[in-house]
Image 1 (tube, protein in one colour):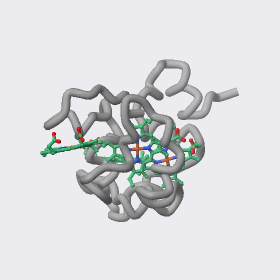
Image 2: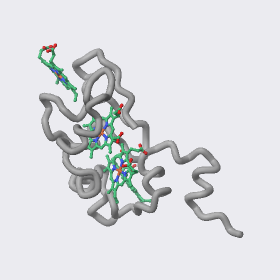
Image 3: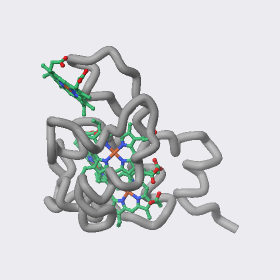
Image 4: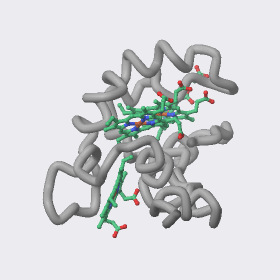
Length: 104
Ligand code: HEC
Ligand code: HEC
Ligand code: HEC
Ligand code: HEC
C-alpha cells in the first residue's frame, strides 16, 4: 500500500507545525488561505470560520497558565500574530511582557 502524504509527514515527524497538523486532520491549503496561490499570511477569517472568534476561543482557554492569551487588551488581533502555519508559533505578548506562553 502506498502511504499517503500525510502519513509520511507524521512518520517523519514533519507534523510539528500547525498547518501540518491541520492537513493531517483533512484541512487543505484553502481552508486557511483564501488566495490562490497562498499569500504570506493566513486569513483570521478562515480560522474563525472553524474555531469561532477571539471571544469563543477565549472561553476554551480560560484556564491557560499563566494567562488567557485570547482575552487581553489587544482585543481581536490576527490569529497569526501568535499561531504560525509553517514555522514555530510565537508569543506576541512577549514583546512587552515577561510571561511565557506555549503557543500550539
Ligand atoms: C477547516 C477548519 C479549520 C480551519 C480553517 C482552522 N482550523 Fe484549527 N483546528 C481544526 C480542527 C478540526 C482542530 C482539531 C480539534 C480542535 O482542537 O479543535 C484544530 C486545532 C487547532 C489548534 C489546536 C491543536 C493543534 O494542533 O495545535 C489550534 C491552535 C488551531 N487549530 C488554530 C488554528 C488557526 C490559528 C487557524 C487559522 C490560521 C486554524 N486553526 C484554522 C479546524 C480548523
Ligand atoms: C497572543 C497569542 C495568541 C493569539 C493572538 C491567538 N492565540 Fe490561540 N492560543 C494561544 C496559546 C498560548 C494557546 C494555548 C493555550 C493553553 O495553554 O491552553 C492557544 C490555543 C488555541 C487553540 C486551542 C484551544 C484548546 O481547545 O485548547 C485554538 C483553537 C486557538 N488557540 C485558536 C486561535 C484563534 C482562532 C485565534 C484568532 C482569533 C487565536 N487563537 C489567536 C495564543 C494565541
Ligand atoms: C492551519 C492553517 C494553514 C494551512 C492548512 C496552510 N497554511 Fe500556509 N500559512 C498559514 C499561516 C498562519 C501562514 C503565515 C506564515 C507562517 O505562519 O508560516 C502561512 C503562510 C503560507 C505561505 C507564505 C509564507 C511561506 O511560508 O512561504 C505560503 C506560500 C503558504 N502558507 C502555503 C500553504 C500551502 C501550499 C498549504 C497547503 C499545502 C498551506 N499553506 C496550508 C496557515 C496555514
Ligand atoms: C506593545 C506592548 C504590549 C503588548 C504586545 C501586550 N501588552 Fe499587555 N500591557 C502593556 C502595557 C503598556 C500595559 C499597562 C502597563 C502595565 O500594567 O504593565 C499592559 C498591561 C497588561 C495587563 C495588566 C497588567 C497588570 O499587572 O494589571 C495584562 C494582564 C496584560 N497586559 C496582558 C497582555 C497579554 C495577554 C498580551 C498578549 C495577548 C499583552 N498584554 C500584550 C503592553 C503590551
